[in-house]
Length: 417
Image 1 (cartoon, one colour):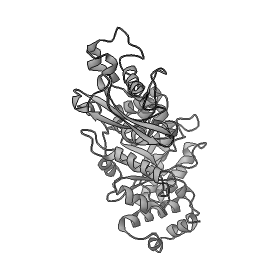
Image 2: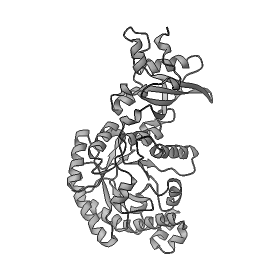
Image 3: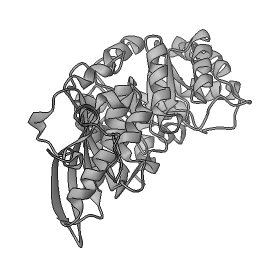
Image 4: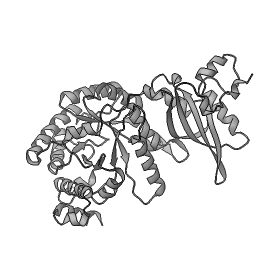
């Protein structure tokens, strides 16, 4: 009979049941130790440890031990990198992300590997354990009344340090320029000087006042990020004050906190997940890759939209990472619907067309400083942005569009410098 340390190795065809299949890049191994190290990791992250212990039974191994489905060594300069696929029994993960990542990312220095988690797959009927987003782009279009183009999101700047009444003035100017959505900056929470319910009340008034001129009401996403219990209180207060959308900084608030908010309030508010802090989770030779952490996981947690860092076309590696992340947010996944890709960070009227070319019409384009920093003010910056996105959809060049929009011409003159 095989020793249980030999059991971690299986062919994918042998899997029977529901599994989370993780793909890793593994560093610091070589031909002489990689098989044993990978086997120890599979055992140590599920049923055993680095030495044989009497309490591990064949039944436990069969039902609850991770399986190594493939292992390949790839030359990478002076060291070799192993590409390893492990299948973790869904039954071990207790229906929460905290236990999932405890298993996936290692907890025992005696069996830990230097890994970077680069992909997750849902094998068997594992997808049924996740509900995914309760709302879609269609729901957001119904909320905004905007069809046929990407939605434009503005972020209130400055980020913090102002009252709800002062923030409402900033909100009004951007809404007057015609933007579809406005959110808090991720740095503004439920502070003593600017509380969630007060912001929703003031900003909703500003949205209605601007709508008298524009003919549409800009939708506000209030940041409810807090301790888990307080986040629920913030959500309730926001809804009571009239909020239709909210923002959650999920990296540091936690995936389970996000999932609970989505499960309880996802049918009453459109929930945007923000990636602030993801750099602490993803680095060159470790952590969790962006396509997993801001692509797939918030989608499984039930977020409706996910902020995703914009990258230009100059760095091929960053662009590859961005496009893989968008794939993870959108590709068909059994019963799990897609999330709405929301791009932010350095977006201006000058690059809206290229982003639209990449993402199509069913995306949210976040423009912050390029609206508030417009030489004519936020309302002019918003008008320039709206002119630019409409030109992109119509296939009109930016310069041609600027001939009929002085605010866009001013933006071009400003940002091309």
